[in-house]
Image (cartoon, rainbow, N blue to C red; front, side, top):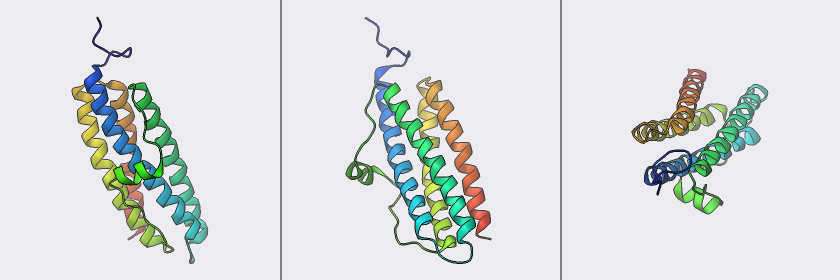
Length: 157
């Protein structure tokens, strides 16, 4: 009997990765919802530019959320679903009633930093498990989130 998933991974390693990816999925979902709320509630002289920035950010986060959920399914696991599960699991705090662009950007830097810590830990696990699919996806997420931290921090100077 074959002791691997159809994609060639050890089932126990895949389940451990899927659990970590579900944690990341929760973080991405909360981050995305926060950014969407920032876009809706902004006020001030930078409103138009900031709305476009936040729209691009949440569209990107939404696409990442789908990619991570699909990877979890590829690992033969179930992605988290439901706000209660997501909020209970996420290390990114839900934020509301932020109307100032600079405050929103500080929240984004903090959230992206949480994502990066989790993504780097998962990258190590993926490499140890010889899961090149997850490692490649995580590499793309890390590069994007590092750039977002730089852009958000630069906007605060």
